[in-house]
Length: 568
Image (cartoon, rainbow, N blue to C red; front, side):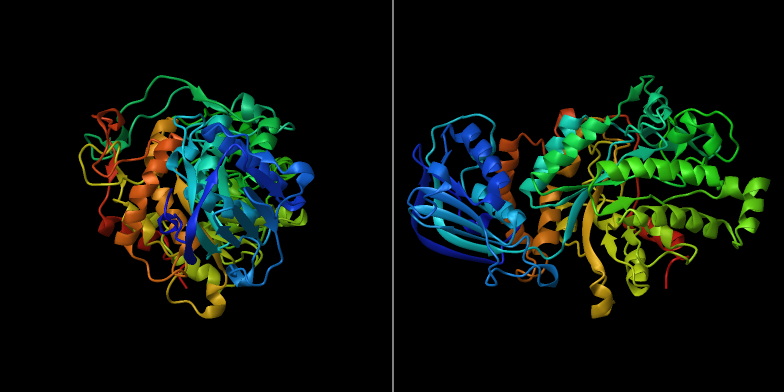
């Protein structure tokens, strides 16, 4: 039995009751039709861990009787309001000595109430099989809650290192348990193309695998240039068939997680160019990249290339019901365009001023195509460059919050993912044993303090910030175990920052850490190999593999320099 004050994220209101409710062999679940998928989820969870049958009430009746867990959707105006007053994700959990009632503004709200219910049980409820006999008791309580932000997500890069569909679905389970509702699925890169496109089969026949991978970060060579320290000599690859994608999307939908796809353009496209060289500036054959970093290879600006990626997006849109479709736009080198006579001719043909406007033109064409399907395009904050972005496009601000400020002031919706607050590939301490240390130190406390809304916006501008996400890049994350290590427990802090934010009262990191002590038992029961506070275990270390650590001052100076052209 767990006190409701130990929930993560922290709820808006808890009120203790008298007594306890026990799940026993006679406990039944009653669900209205709108909550049917949540009933199935709860039954599967409880049956595996408790061994109890938790059957349905007879013919769906008896929801008002004793020894019942009742799930229902209600247009209840007394539920707390979420973003903009929306109550679709709001819930009320009422536990008495003889029954449990979960009321949600929609099935999503019921699902989140069930998450609060599960956290109120012993941590072993998260195990897949029985390890004890209980008792499976819940303290009598009332919990009312609603999210602070509509978009609460994690970006998973499966292009640098592929994750199987089962590993992806495991991540979805982890997000759902923390009331995170978006999985930004980063599917294409210089190092791999991970989604089947039936019109262009070479994208996966050629582009889905590389002959080897860089090990660790670049190091300084004898002449002061950055060089690759070594490669593993081992082919790496994989991709999702269209049926795999449908399965992942459906699995996520049952857990109220929206899978949001991203297809990179016009940079980070070397895997596509390896498959179809005519898409590139030179047209010369190249391999899928085996290094990390930013390849100079980019798309050309021919109409045939635009059509190619419109065709790709058509198949992507058909697979993903997400309102948002990502078109990339980040870290696009301009050197090939600058040196290529045909590209310079094309810039003049289109009446553009420079390469930044050419990038904006490509993104604009693809975004318009997405919008022609009734969807919304989103891209990284570089899409603000050139100054011609359609107001309907949503901006993902990653280079600090400069992009969030500029985009909100220009009338764009914003998703904040500033690297210095929520980049989950970044190192978690200054310890020498930290595996392949990347960039700045980003602790649980740092993520807990994340606020996706810049502090110098007007109320009208603040309304454009629809939420935030943590980004999990995987250059140095080559296994599901390492993924766990990077994600947790920082994802628990991210969930608190995006669901609770400051709505439940001033943030108190010491109080959060008290709840986190309880929460890590849940992570262990889920089988999540989280990073322990004392540092990495010996088997989590990577001795001798170089990283690329920076100080916060170095990183801030770099970000200021590269965002100067989008700062308003």
